[in-house]
Image (cartoon, rainbow, N blue to C red; front, side, top):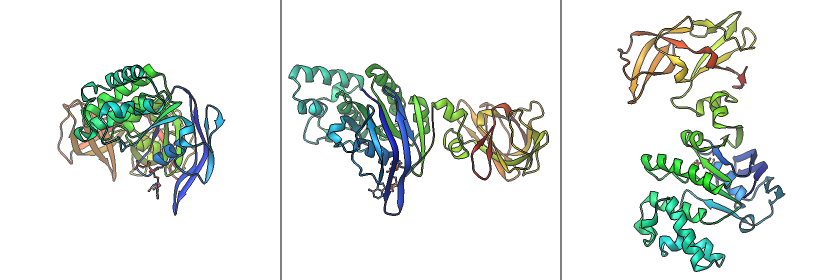
Length: 354
Ligand code: ATP
């Protein structure tokens, strides 16, 4: 297994700058997730690493060696696409076996390897079928099995769980992290699903419009987002953002409220800021003086919790509350802020301030 690195990748498709100086270093044996919204450049990054995309600039290094000029085959990477690219006339067994046949493995070796990997992915009972007789989710697992049966330098996976229903998708997240641990391989995994990224990754690279916004562990990206955009993209419900500025020992909101100035901030007085607070760091139970005056807008019961939408002036806060919370829209409701866990962003640049 090995390290995968991309330095200064640039790629334009006509007017669209799909990659604008993307640099990523994937440590050997890690589960590295590239996370970003649709169109961020995730697939293009993966294809560039695989050698399937001609770059305008930049280089790809595998195991520390410049592999930019290498053919896809010479790179020895296994790629799992969103579309499964299975052979329609071959059985599932033969589809999974095909990379091993290409290397002239013995029949015993092939049988053992297919058995092992189909067990890992719970598809043993499908081995005699053809792709046309499989559901989308089953095809996706066969495509994964075909990649995993090899022992490549690294696995590149492009949203391999998109076609699974929610239950199977959640199960497969756990399965894939388990498979990763047992194989000990290097995984580069692309997704637009932040829950998937946070639950599976050792390291996450957050991509937006062809640029890397932040690279870090899931905890770092969630708790210490580099900027307002990352803070809003990662986390559900979305982080609440309130326009304000510091004034002496207070934070003064554009909507007229004031809060104690967080002890940790060095922002100078008067500078336009955004206070960012996650739903779990807001409460509709009144505690202490860090409270914002608002009015109940709506309740979203989610079983184990309820998300309460509270309007503070024109701004909307999302508050995680107990499932027993009640209220009528329009009623007054104050929201307590855990300022030790809040974030401040420069309102002009969006960058996180400490
Ligand atoms: P998704 O999550 O929707 O798959 P992505 O993050 O993988 O998105 P890319 O597929 O890498 O994004 O695309 C990045 C940008 O480049 C997009 O604006 C896309 O429309 C454009 N793009 C990608 N491939 C091509 C192509 N072959 N021709 C023209 N434009 C392209």
